[in-house]
Image (tube, rainbow, N blue to C red; front, side):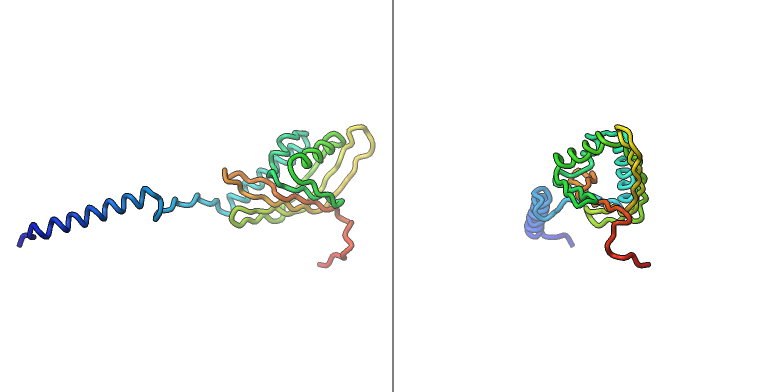
Length: 177
């Protein structure tokens, strides 16, 4: 049995309305949302952080001031072992310029843990550093712990937002095993 023409016309009209409505919703973005950018997995983040960490150490040694400062977010803070807080690119630049004008850093970082969640990641470990004075004098040897907190920017780049160091042997709280 053939469908009656009077039935096909309203059916075709309803179908046309549904197709047009679906197309309008799809193009307007009201009902559809863009697929979220794929988030890197934990090992990808850990690898990216390791690359930044190693690059940072080389740039400090080679006295590449602009490259060091470029690793920090505009509102980043560097917390020194002596308790100083250097916030923002001008203060961080001044800190590293003083360091680079005064000593050459022979630094080794040993990462113990790198973790991430969403757009935040951190790298924590210990370090050994020898500071070689630019104007002569004895080398200074330090060791301690570090913590670097990173935030993924809208462009996907990881930047340092908090960076801190400690000196071993200056704890007032006894260490326990």
